[in-house]
Image (tube, rainbow over all chains, first blue to last red; front, side, top):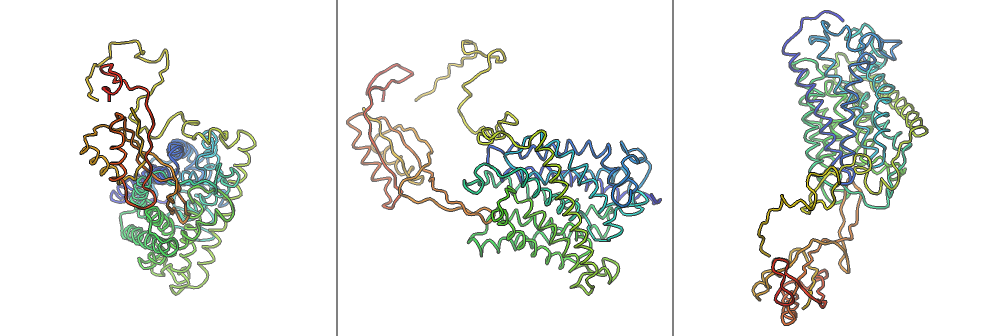
Length: 448
Length: 112
């Protein structure tokens, strides 16, 4: 770590950004939870919540070190170097304390894993999900984060190969997070198999107001995700912030227009989905395109992602909440669009500028290579993890439990009790009031 | 005594209730129900996927009536609940053996 003066303004901004990014995972729980049927809302939200628990622990033990330790061949950070966050206190990354950077990147690791849960609605054993989270974070996310986010000399002397050798731009995680999670969602959905009745019985969202609340909170958190990735309170953060406004705004409009033309209606789910697609697409590009470039990326994402959703019916995989259609496709659009729109004044040279911004094909090729490596690695390793779990502990809940609702089967809870009727059953031995206990009678007169 | 059950359009309930109250009929049990008969359902679109929802939300009224009031009640429901298009619903009448008011223990028509 090279020595820099700690800047309190930068440090404050990164700390705030870290909290904003952490909020995105509960926001994702709402976004996803509203889209499923009421009998699986708790399980869907729990998959996001438990990911905060699991990855939160993994990150401070060996996760950060695997992602940002001194590189072993550009492929993996040394897991021993910062084990238990050893050697972190007293060090700095850029102008902020290293431990602040640890917290910021922890929230990234958490949401990357949680994103996958949208593909496995209503049928994956909760225990299998928890083991999957440990395996996927360790074998897929930590390495991919190392490849993309670990620049030589930033935290350790040597970083990952996509950032330093391929030199693909990925400002805040289009490849490491969105392409990665999207490809993993595809592999996991294929191994897991579709929900009972998929494509035959209607499975409509049970609460679109939760979806819109979640999308709004995701957008709010995403300002930390992108503008925080500047790792400073400066103009670069401001540019990322404005691009994080412009791209999702354009994507929402593009999605709504596509829907209106194709299906006849502009829907609230379309608006929420368009915002998220735009956020995904601008994530890798937020610091290297102008706001007009951000609008172009947003339009591409809004149209492209809304058209990509029908793929799952064509190919028959039950990616329940379109993690592939939104995150994989949106991540690819954003990552490749850098090769078209990256501005030379922001990237530093014409060599690294996009094809439509005066540059050549060089950067587009780098972007495609970076995206392809993450996509293929993530798909293959996720497929292997899923197969291993399927053959050992099993991935799916019993069919009867799935039909009755995974919330009851896996968590012994019900998401909503909107009934005014009281429970008629009581648990003898645990109950405080047995039916022959008259002391609680209220004798209230109620006229008929 | 009769049990009169009506399945109505959601938007007809207020008119029916007011009309019945004007006839001096006070008291009904109202339930939100879903089902289908001749009326076609509607389509909903989520992320480009079209759902045809055949079940239609209706309101069900259950009214306990004295024998002498039954015809008036049915007539009133049919007049106030009618829009003239498919989906206005149905009314049916069943005989009732006995009715008991829980609070007083009264039986028969005096319990209505």
